[in-house]
Image 1 (cartoon, rainbow, N blue to C red):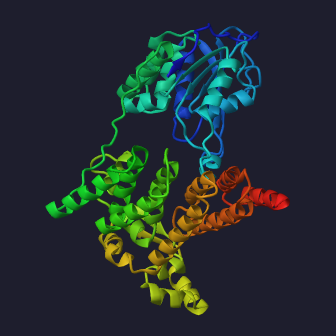
Image 2: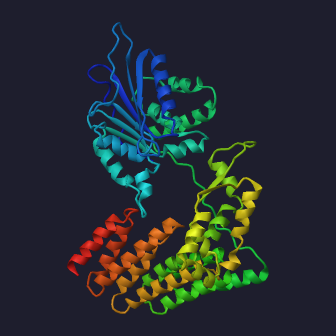
Image 3: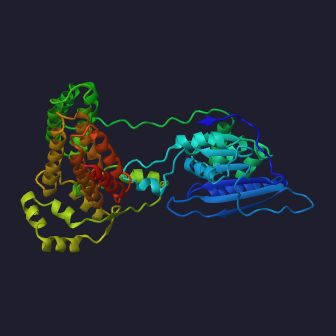
Length: 508
């Protein structure tokens, strides 16, 4: 939470009209908040007009709500339908990036605008589409707001509202009241909420939290951190697990921390024997490493990710885990007695089906275009399965329980071959260029997901390593490996990667 210097609001414009704009995305209660503001104004002798222009769905744009109000008098004021750049007294945004957009559009000015925003993030589609980290920087928006606004009030109003069993519209309404930028008493704001009836008590609690946040520093509710579940099993299995954990713990501290996490991940994915194989791979890298052991630390992370790949068995297992249905119901806000129907959309390609076959049989089938086309025709149809029904749930449950067959499958053979080739490539660079070896280990980040996502990641991974081979031997090879990897993470289609590869080819 941050509260900047409480400078009085710029007040109404020269025409005596108070102009307030609100940017909110779907589900944040922008319409409710607008109605409350209208109710407060009219109940206190003001005439008021509110308009809204809907944004694009799927979080590519916010709805713009615009309110103008003025004291009632003998002559009716002339109101505008939309906010204009440089002509907004109060800007309220229900998400940090919307605050940034309001600044870019010129709605926030240092001579008059009070900017009230929530600091939480509701990621835009453009941020989610980036294969790497596409999240825009909130710090940059805060820095711009401190310069652009006359007064800037920011807090995680979403968290404050959730802690009170309400939604962000109520806490933002409280912040608007607490900012004291409208000429109405707190009781008038609370009366507007009470007139709504249903849910008023929770809304009033959230209002109070938002009011306090606008007037001074507040402590956000502590979020409980989920503890890692302790391993469970027979005494023999627990003793074997402890032996593996102790083996990982004896590695250098920088490596041990990551190795213990990786060990837990691969054992959960398969079994204790698989965990021992994981440690053997990490130890082989460590044997050739040196302090500060960055190569081994990265290897401990990405070897675990490579060994715990997403196959049909894992996807089915995750969809039938204990507690998943309850978690989804809680996220949907379902009340006791509500019926929640859960539909899974499955789109298996022929490659996923063949990957379940024993390795030799699967390789023969995969080499047959006729059989692959036949399997694709049979299975690649986009299936919807109601896992709240017994039949669909049991089908996935049985499939998710096929862990013992996994290690003999074609998919596992392919993953192991790819993992070993990747490690051999990285270790091949080690003696002449340590930093390049580390960057090649990190390139495994490109391989993730399931089905088409996994195939695209593999394709990018292979192209990046082709580029790395071109620059190997140069003094800046590690830097170019990093640039190629980051380019591959910028867009799904790989346009940025192709541009970077073209640059490499131009000077090699």
